[in-house]
Amino acid sequence: MVKTAGALGELTQAVLELARGQARLITAMSDVERGQWITHLIVRSQITADPVERPGS
Image (tube, rainbow, N blue to C red; front, side, top):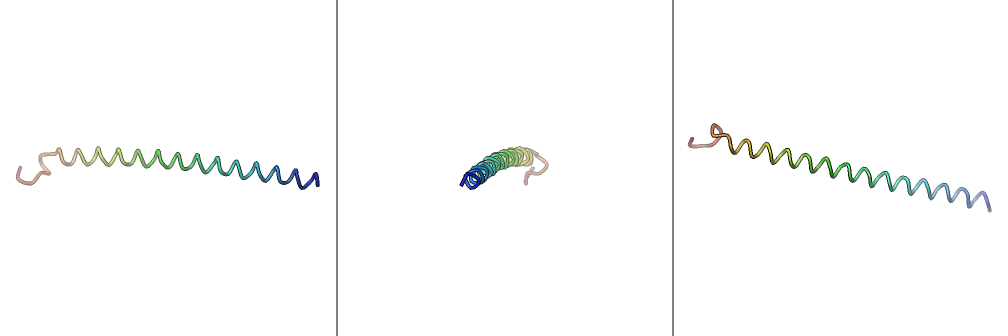
């Protein structure tokens, strides 16, 4: 029974570490997505502000 309890404790720790790792990954992916959105907005604003690209200029 002691071996089973020890193995269960190790398994629990492994699952918790996996969950923590997934949470860190989700946070990192969110940061990347936010950075891509900001880059998109900057590029889009530069294109629309460029008088050469505007029709009728």
